[in-house]
Length: 202
Length: 191
Image (cartoon, rainbow over all chains, first blue to last red; front, side, top):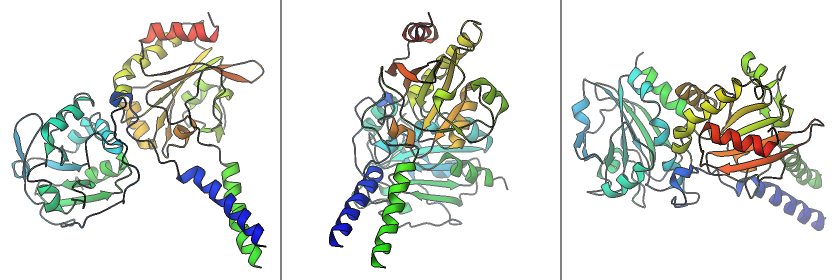
């Protein structure tokens, strides 16, 4: 009986390990060559959100890679705003997210929305990293100093100093209409963001 | 009774593993090999169904496409080089389709690694991709292909007896439509 149990346990382990030991490969674009740092599987969410849908989105001013400073409040009454926090430059899933947003400028325009990409990396790092993505049409903002202050304000700063993989949709009145604090190990499906944008019209 | 409790999960897990259409591989498909075994859904669009020479519903395997050679591009909507190459890949499709010697002998498909159906449709619309694209939402096919970097091109020759071989495979470095067609013709023996 003990022998049967042992054999079965081994078979289960082999079968399961065939699937779960191989995480999905993000950041596989040849554009990044061998420069993507493998972070392994991380705790899906490691922070406590400070805002909720219906709240006024906390204002901020951050420097962008292109040089100018960007404030959320300057878009109030003019544009819907999407904030895309990604954890870190040169890491797998993050490198596989904004290049997709870069080819759907038309969807953002149809929904009268602007996108801001935000990480806690400094400007030179963001400059080098986003250069590999082709020409991004949206501003990329650095929440480097004071380190992660905006991420902290929204409640998406993880305990190791990087941000969550988070999406916030803010309407023209400055109200938070959609929040997705996504599993850091996975890319948010595009359709979820597009659905959230389309709901702004209703 | 105790034994039944232990055996049922084992049987279930083993069956799921064995009947699963896709198994992970530790290296990319290479010249001289056969394709990893995986199924793709038969397209709903009559035009795409007709292009691949398929009928009905359900699933198919690449060697079932009614043609001599299939060019498979493993790409992603999120991959900058795939985006950059997209117009040139479309040009290859047009080059093949307008040549009566190649039109029915070479077919093209794309597999979106880690892309949902919506993401595949978005890419197709953005770049006006004229050939069928298939989602690989959970990276299952990508894993079966040894987690290749993207874009990755696999040229498959289908023999009259239904067997097949990979006659060319390359990571990126898309040289443009005409040079790539030359590579395909030479590798597949169509020229």
